[in-house]
Length: 321
Image (cartoon, rainbow, N blue to C red; front, side, top):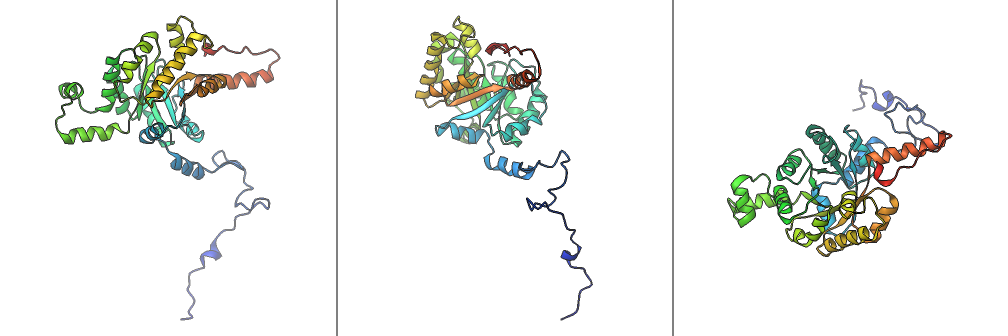
């Protein structure tokens, strides 16, 4: 009692950190080193906690869709570096679709993006190269939480794609028996597959006149979360390339959205401009797929360069980029 310890008080050895008088924030007078957040910007810890609070995955995205909410996302065609994922996370996208139908993104690159997007709090979706079932299985094996299956036209190919996503990893003859006759190896197997399937997003591309003609039968297959409308392909199929104001295009797109919505399935197109997005939200679209990395970068530089150059920078038409 009363004896003094030989250890110095922690407070006596603590280094005092200068504070800016206008903020009272420790170390606020330090110059940014490129890693520290700029003044007034959230810290990395703050961004991380924000992502954790709003982290989106396949299960949560399905729940949001099924509750009738609108979902917002974009598509990447140029992006290879996984660091881009944090940008999409900070922008609070619900999902990002990585394109491998038209873009030359490899399987390894896509897998890296899938994990990076998920870590950033964004649900990763892969637009597979075609409707073949193995493409869907490979996407899910690579870490994606869902697939966009492009240019589907028949109930049969949609059924095959949906079952590839919903019954993985069941394969071969037993897969076909389950799909065609409802016969599973056991009740436990069915329960296991159903549990995995609830976390998988399946988007089906309706992008042609034959697909529209078969739309009701396609939707009858079940297991579809979103209907994707490909504006360019659809307009070409309708004989009016890139004419998105044409009555035929508007009628066809409205029909797709309305028909899907009656089944509780959101539908929407990959529209590149704010005006078109607003127009189709007004028509009831709950699936918002806005622009993409190619157009976003092009438009940013076009607008900026226009301020610096004496000559007017040509404004690209919708279908050019």
